[in-house]
Length: 230
Image (cartoon, rainbow, N blue to C red; front, side, top):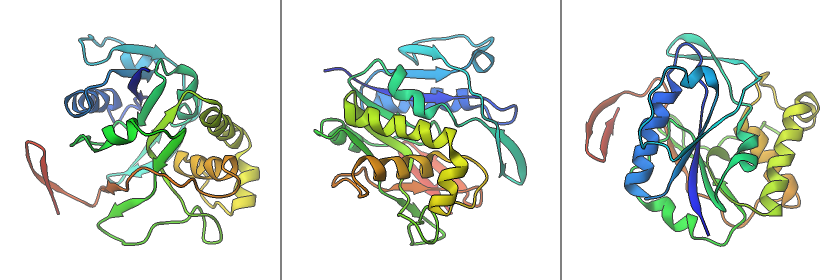
Protein backbone atom coordinates (compact mmCIF):
# COMPACT_ATOMS: atom_id res chain seq x y z
CA UNK A 1 0.00 0.00 0.00
CA UNK A 2 1.47 3.36 -1.05
CA UNK A 3 2.03 6.08 1.52
CA UNK A 4 2.99 9.69 0.85
CA UNK A 5 2.46 13.33 1.74
CA UNK A 6 0.44 16.01 -0.05
CA UNK A 7 1.30 19.71 0.30
CA UNK A 8 -0.71 22.66 -1.03
CA UNK A 9 0.89 25.98 -2.03
CA UNK A 10 -0.78 29.06 -3.53
CA UNK A 11 1.37 32.21 -3.46
CA UNK A 12 -0.44 35.48 -2.68
CA UNK A 13 2.05 38.18 -3.66
CA UNK A 14 3.32 38.52 -0.07
CA UNK A 15 4.21 35.06 1.22
CA UNK A 16 6.18 32.52 -0.83
CA UNK A 17 4.24 29.38 0.02
CA UNK A 18 6.12 27.47 -2.69
CA UNK A 19 9.40 28.05 -0.84
CA UNK A 20 7.77 26.92 2.41
CA UNK A 21 6.53 23.80 0.60
CA UNK A 22 10.07 23.00 -0.55
CA UNK A 23 11.38 23.27 3.03
CA UNK A 24 8.49 21.20 4.36
CA UNK A 25 8.98 18.49 1.72
CA UNK A 26 12.66 18.12 2.57
CA UNK A 27 11.86 17.76 6.27
CA UNK A 28 9.20 15.14 5.49
CA UNK A 29 11.63 13.10 3.42
CA UNK A 30 14.32 13.38 6.10
CA UNK A 31 12.17 12.28 9.04
CA UNK A 32 9.38 10.20 7.45
CA UNK A 33 11.06 8.93 4.28
CA UNK A 34 7.93 9.12 2.13
CA UNK A 35 7.29 10.70 -1.29
CA UNK A 36 5.73 14.17 -1.52
CA UNK A 37 3.18 15.51 -4.01
CA UNK A 38 2.56 19.24 -4.42
CA UNK A 39 -0.84 20.68 -5.33
CA UNK A 40 -0.37 24.19 -6.68
CA UNK A 41 -1.39 26.61 -9.42
CA UNK A 42 0.40 27.70 -12.58
CA UNK A 43 1.13 31.23 -11.29
CA UNK A 44 2.82 29.92 -8.14
CA UNK A 45 5.20 27.65 -10.04
CA UNK A 46 5.76 29.94 -13.00
CA UNK A 47 9.47 30.30 -13.67
CA UNK A 48 10.43 27.80 -10.95
CA UNK A 49 13.07 25.16 -11.62
CA UNK A 50 12.28 21.75 -10.18
CA UNK A 51 14.62 19.24 -8.60
CA UNK A 52 13.80 16.08 -6.66
CA UNK A 53 12.04 17.96 -3.86
CA UNK A 54 8.64 16.83 -5.12
CA UNK A 55 7.87 13.43 -6.58
CA UNK A 56 4.91 14.83 -8.50
CA UNK A 57 3.19 18.17 -9.03
CA UNK A 58 -0.53 18.61 -9.74
CA UNK A 59 -1.82 21.95 -10.99
CA UNK A 60 -5.06 22.98 -9.34
CA UNK A 61 -6.64 26.46 -9.34
CA UNK A 62 -7.90 28.26 -6.25
CA UNK A 63 -11.03 30.38 -6.55
CA UNK A 64 -11.33 31.77 -3.02
CA UNK A 65 -9.40 34.85 -1.91
CA UNK A 66 -9.75 35.43 1.84
CA UNK A 67 -7.93 38.09 3.82
CA UNK A 68 -6.02 37.96 7.09
CA UNK A 69 -3.51 40.11 8.94
CA UNK A 70 -0.01 38.70 9.22
CA UNK A 71 2.85 40.72 10.73
CA UNK A 72 0.54 43.78 10.75
CA UNK A 73 -0.04 43.40 7.02
CA UNK A 74 -3.33 42.41 5.40
CA UNK A 75 -2.75 39.54 2.98
CA UNK A 76 -4.97 37.50 0.74
CA UNK A 77 -4.80 33.74 1.16
CA UNK A 78 -6.17 30.88 -0.88
CA UNK A 79 -7.41 27.97 1.18
CA UNK A 80 -10.29 26.38 -0.72
CA UNK A 81 -8.38 23.54 -2.41
CA UNK A 82 -7.59 21.44 0.70
CA UNK A 83 -10.92 19.64 0.32
CA UNK A 84 -9.73 18.41 -3.11
CA UNK A 85 -6.71 16.57 -1.68
CA UNK A 86 -8.66 13.30 -1.61
CA UNK A 87 -9.38 13.62 -5.35
CA UNK A 88 -5.76 14.29 -6.33
CA UNK A 89 -3.63 12.24 -3.95
CA UNK A 90 -1.77 9.40 -5.69
CA UNK A 91 -1.39 7.51 -2.38
CA UNK A 92 -3.53 4.98 -0.53
CA UNK A 93 -2.49 6.56 2.79
CA UNK A 94 -1.90 10.31 2.72
CA UNK A 95 -0.37 12.81 5.11
CA UNK A 96 -1.99 16.16 4.29
CA UNK A 97 -0.02 18.87 6.03
CA UNK A 98 0.32 22.66 6.01
CA UNK A 99 3.51 23.90 4.36
CA UNK A 100 4.34 26.05 7.41
CA UNK A 101 4.34 22.98 9.66
CA UNK A 102 7.86 21.88 10.60
CA UNK A 103 8.29 18.09 10.67
CA UNK A 104 11.07 17.65 13.19
CA UNK A 105 10.75 13.98 14.16
CA UNK A 106 9.36 10.65 12.97
CA UNK A 107 6.36 10.76 15.34
CA UNK A 108 3.81 10.90 12.52
CA UNK A 109 5.23 7.71 11.00
CA UNK A 110 3.43 5.65 13.65
CA UNK A 111 0.10 7.23 12.73
CA UNK A 112 0.70 6.58 9.03
CA UNK A 113 0.77 2.88 9.92
CA UNK A 114 -2.47 3.02 11.92
CA UNK A 115 -5.66 1.37 10.68
CA UNK A 116 -7.80 4.52 10.75
CA UNK A 117 -9.72 6.09 7.87
CA UNK A 118 -9.34 9.71 8.91
CA UNK A 119 -7.38 11.49 11.64
CA UNK A 120 -6.66 15.15 12.27
CA UNK A 121 -4.81 17.07 14.98
CA UNK A 122 -6.85 17.05 18.19
CA UNK A 123 -5.73 20.51 19.34
CA UNK A 124 -2.89 22.97 19.73
CA UNK A 125 -0.19 23.87 22.21
CA UNK A 126 -0.23 27.64 22.24
CA UNK A 127 2.22 29.72 24.25
CA UNK A 128 -0.50 32.30 24.84
CA UNK A 129 -3.26 29.97 26.11
CA UNK A 130 -3.78 26.54 27.62
CA UNK A 131 -7.32 26.20 26.30
CA UNK A 132 -8.42 24.46 23.12
CA UNK A 133 -10.81 26.70 21.17
CA UNK A 134 -14.31 25.77 20.06
CA UNK A 135 -15.75 26.24 16.59
CA UNK A 136 -17.88 28.82 18.42
CA UNK A 137 -18.73 29.54 22.06
CA UNK A 138 -21.85 27.33 21.82
CA UNK A 139 -20.52 24.68 19.46
CA UNK A 140 -18.22 21.67 19.10
CA UNK A 141 -14.53 21.51 19.98
CA UNK A 142 -12.37 22.65 17.10
CA UNK A 143 -9.68 20.35 15.75
CA UNK A 144 -6.91 21.38 13.39
CA UNK A 145 -6.59 20.64 9.67
CA UNK A 146 -2.89 21.52 9.87
CA UNK A 147 -2.14 17.79 9.99
CA UNK A 148 -4.49 15.18 8.54
CA UNK A 149 -3.89 11.52 7.73
CA UNK A 150 -6.48 9.71 5.62
CA UNK A 151 -7.00 6.48 3.71
CA UNK A 152 -8.38 6.23 0.20
CA UNK A 153 -11.69 4.81 1.45
CA UNK A 154 -15.37 5.75 1.64
CA UNK A 155 -15.21 7.20 5.16
CA UNK A 156 -12.42 9.65 4.32
CA UNK A 157 -14.15 10.49 1.03
CA UNK A 158 -17.32 11.31 2.97
CA UNK A 159 -15.39 13.75 5.18
CA UNK A 160 -13.85 15.54 2.20
CA UNK A 161 -17.18 15.64 0.35
CA UNK A 162 -18.79 17.11 3.46
CA UNK A 163 -16.11 19.82 3.60
CA UNK A 164 -16.91 20.72 -0.01
CA UNK A 165 -20.58 21.00 0.94
CA UNK A 166 -19.71 23.25 3.89
CA UNK A 167 -17.50 25.42 1.68
CA UNK A 168 -20.28 25.83 -0.88
CA UNK A 169 -22.92 26.53 1.78
CA UNK A 170 -20.81 28.38 4.31
CA UNK A 171 -23.47 30.89 5.38
CA UNK A 172 -25.85 28.08 6.34
CA UNK A 173 -23.26 26.27 8.46
CA UNK A 174 -22.16 29.56 9.99
CA UNK A 175 -25.73 30.06 11.23
CA UNK A 176 -26.10 26.48 12.51
CA UNK A 177 -22.75 26.34 14.30
CA UNK A 178 -22.55 29.98 15.38
CA UNK A 179 -19.46 30.80 13.31
CA UNK A 180 -18.67 34.51 13.41
CA UNK A 181 -15.69 34.60 11.05
CA UNK A 182 -16.48 35.74 7.52
CA UNK A 183 -13.48 33.83 6.19
CA UNK A 184 -13.80 30.19 5.26
CA UNK A 185 -11.50 28.19 7.57
CA UNK A 186 -10.43 24.62 6.95
CA UNK A 187 -9.99 23.98 10.68
CA UNK A 188 -13.66 24.78 11.22
CA UNK A 189 -14.93 23.03 8.09
CA UNK A 190 -13.02 19.80 8.73
CA UNK A 191 -14.01 19.79 12.42
CA UNK A 192 -17.69 20.07 11.48
CA UNK A 193 -17.36 17.55 8.63
CA UNK A 194 -15.66 14.95 10.82
CA UNK A 195 -18.27 15.48 13.53
CA UNK A 196 -21.11 14.92 11.05
CA UNK A 197 -19.60 11.89 9.26
CA UNK A 198 -18.75 10.14 12.52
CA UNK A 199 -22.33 10.42 13.80
CA UNK A 200 -22.17 13.74 15.66
CA UNK A 201 -19.19 12.66 17.72
CA UNK A 202 -15.42 12.72 17.49
CA UNK A 203 -13.61 9.53 16.39
CA UNK A 204 -11.66 7.67 19.06
CA UNK A 205 -8.23 8.28 17.48
CA UNK A 206 -6.82 11.69 16.54
CA UNK A 207 -3.40 13.06 15.67
CA UNK A 208 -1.31 14.74 18.40
CA UNK A 209 -1.65 18.39 19.24
CA UNK A 210 0.47 20.77 17.19
CA UNK A 211 2.78 23.42 18.60
CA UNK A 212 1.18 26.61 17.36
CA UNK A 213 3.26 29.78 16.89
CA UNK A 214 1.84 33.18 15.99
CA UNK A 215 3.41 36.31 14.54
CA UNK A 216 3.89 37.45 18.14
CA UNK A 217 6.27 34.54 18.89
CA UNK A 218 9.92 34.99 17.95
CA UNK A 219 12.22 32.19 16.76
CA UNK A 220 15.60 33.17 18.22
CA UNK A 221 17.72 30.13 17.34
CA UNK A 222 17.66 27.04 15.13
CA UNK A 223 20.25 24.34 15.77
CA UNK A 224 19.62 21.18 13.78
CA UNK A 225 16.24 19.86 14.95
CA UNK A 226 16.19 22.18 17.98
CA UNK A 227 14.24 25.42 17.72
CA UNK A 228 14.30 28.06 20.47
CA UNK A 229 11.25 30.32 20.67
CA UNK A 230 10.29 33.17 22.99
